[in-house]
Image (cartoon, rainbow, N blue to C red):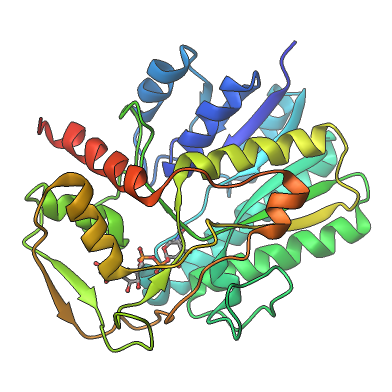
Length: 342
Ligand code: WQD
């Protein structure tokens, strides 16, 4: 009998890649997704890679009745990986209530049902945005949580507090929060990848769409930062490396290796890359010339951040292994597949 894991947001970018790695590890997966930012065809991609089509339930986690019915139906859940949330920083500034309601009510509904139905473990999709602009780099898990730069970032901070406070009074529950840096790239099979709706907010899908001719040119948001080439620095991590960390976190809780019932880890590569580094590396690995222009900074952006990954390396035994070169190439291969470019 395989251990059954619920993946919320499992037809999304990181959720789909994690579902593939969970099934490769021998877990059974059921996905809940409301398809607000993904498509049902992602299940075909997961099946093509894994040879197994995960069970799928389409509804909104904010619907308590439907979620309760779900937990009544799937009685032997061993853990949850909670990805489902809105995640566009700029959109969250324009629509704060939508972000607070969706991202927080969904989590609280899950926690109530976990308690009621005896589902002991949850992995939470958190973000390095909880650190804001760190005072010291690389940023460790001991760095202070800074006031969020956006409602999106604030929902991640508040969610971690909700989890931490709940774990204090629910010793039978376990949480591992994974603080992602910047996830990029696509599965090497090109069967799944990032599928941004409309104009991409994030850098790499904008780069690949520009190279594919869908966008006139890339706007580089600022080259007047206090960084080596003036453009902002981030820690770009391959999405498959990231997915594998989630499987390790699930293993850890199911094998009861977590000494505390609320843990959190930075998931990055430990290396910072600037926007212009990404442009130059993309051009190098693809042979494509990228049309870009330098424009003014984007509101809400921090200058530079990259992870100290020693805690995840030592405690989880996890380390990102895929290079920036192969990761950007995987993003390009996925874009070419999407647009029928050979
Ligand atoms: C990266 C860099 C931009 C687009 C956010 C969230 C984080 C996570 C990833 C969800 C910045 C620059 C971007 C463009 C550019 N979200 N840029 N031109 O803002 O670091 O992180 O997305 O999981 O939680 O905070 O990512 O990819 O938007 O930007 O110059 O067209 O690229 O200014 O320096 P960000 P990003």
